Length: 250
Image (cartoon, rainbow, N blue to C red; front, top):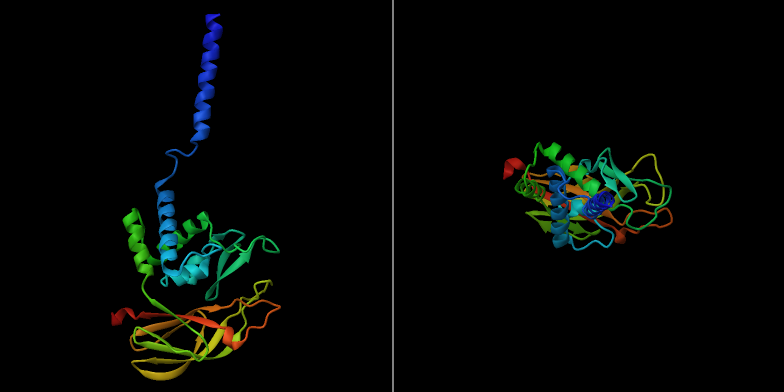
């Protein structure tokens, strides 16, 4: 009888240990690298919301670039999204859907794993190996290196001594969001650029920089996104330009 009770007691103890393990499956199992990736993700989201507001459908590549101008399209190569992933093609990041049609409107939202990949890509590009949360903060500070302005056709906007006035759409060959294309396409817009060198018309191409005497000006985003059944009128376009000082001018 005592032997039977001892056996039952041992079995109960094993079951109790198993239950506790199931209730806390991840205790002390997260690596320092994963903890840093979590901190990176939380900081980007928190600071991003403070800068541009809370996105209804989460942060995608374009919203993160808006919030952190130092991010580049190449940083999003192989970054996982909710319903696909991003690829860097030519001069821009392209969302590649994992199925034929979107399941939700948040298909482009970057996942936890995607934020970890983004951290690895940015760290490699900047040749930084973050080991602490302070290192992550310093890395994020390097991404806040520019000012952004949003302008419409015939609307001039200024910052950092530079004024940009979009004048006309030259090309919009972007792939419609409801289609699959072999080439991503691009946007070219003619705009007047006024800086310390004076005023002159320039042709801005998406994600290609134009330099002035002391600044670098880049067209980083164009909205709205094209759709195969919708014609975008000139007045509906909004252009986001990034202006940053040239390193030698700082």
